[in-house]
Amino acid sequence: MTLSSQQSFETIAPAKLNLFLHINGQRDDGYHELQTVFQLLDYGDRMSFTVTDNPKITLTPDLPGVPSEDNLIIKAAKLLQERFSQEKRLPPKGAHITLDKILPMGGGVGGGSSNAATTLLVLNQLWGLHLSTDELRAIGVKLGADVPVFVLGHTAWAEGIGEQLTPIELPEYWFVVLKPQCEINTKKIFSNKVLTRDTQKMRIAPALEGDVAELGNDCEPVVKHLYPEVEQALSWLGQFGRAKLTGTGSCIFAKFSSKEDANTVWSQRPDSLSGFIAKGINKSPTCSSLNIMVT
Ligand SMILES: C[C@@](CO)(OP(=O)(O)O)[C@H](O)COP(=O)(O)OP(=O)(O)OC[C@H]1O[C@@H](n2ccc(N)nc2=O)[C@H](O)[C@@H]1O
Ligand SMILES: Nc1ncnc2c1ncn2[C@@H]1O[C@H](COP(=O)(O)OP(=O)(O)O)[C@@H](O)[C@H]1O
Image (tube, rainbow, N blue to C red; front, side):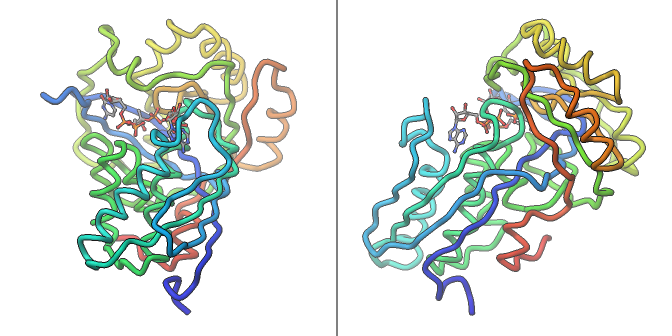
């Protein structure tokens, strides 16, 4: 049975970590050129989708602080509805979507982008649109630089503004991800005058595992300066391994070779730090259950 003959679908929208993040320049449109590795995690928001004949897109529950029209899920569904009308020349279908948000917002783990990509992948199939993954990636990048990697649905080496992707296979390590008590606006960090913007480009996705461990995040000095709570969290986690910022923060992480080691550190964390433990995965659960080939 294909998904287009189904009416409902439930899945996890996974989180990501940036195992390192280099900023190599700035384009004329203000966006920054990056090199990074996106590591997908086996931890994320639960989402469900039910097709409706009525063209309305509804989402429950509301996300506190995010008006419905700004929610990336609604924006993604509406962009896809426009394509539906163009391709099928029929009145568009609608959807009822539920979101069980567990990922910290403004945390650099890509929750909003992952929600948007999951919406594109699932509704593409439930509405019987049959757009290719490349077409969905092109729609996704209009919603945010981080969306295409979640459409690809694979841990990846990334360049450009984060949309030029090469899938890679990494060992499935465990990560302790800690969330200091602050949310960080991506734009605020990227517009900071003293942000490093001239890290030399690496010529190729390095033989990743060893090399990536040594590489840092160019946003870290600015974020540590503006948010002392991030600096404190980094020094606490740094006692147990190499601790790094993900994206523009505020979450930080360190890698462990077993769940037990990760748990030992997690159980000792200060009360001021929330977060989660997760395993690194190569392929996203949504792409696996939708039988999408990674290319
Ligand atoms: C920095 C990264 C690294 O993974 O992650 P987060 O910390 O946000 O998760 C991403 O590139 C963020 O992607 P995303 O959160 O989708 O960003 P967008 O909505 O496209 O952009 C938000 C703002 O960040 C700036 N921006 C974003 C990406 C980029 N390559 N250069 C930029 O200068 C732009 O000012 C833009 O207005
Ligand atoms: N579905 C969504 N989930 C989370 N955030 C969303 C969503 N839609 C819009 N947003 C907005 O995007 C901002 C950044 O989202 P998020 O992906 O959680 O953080 P980050 O980009 O730091 O990983 C949020 O603070 C919120 O204002």
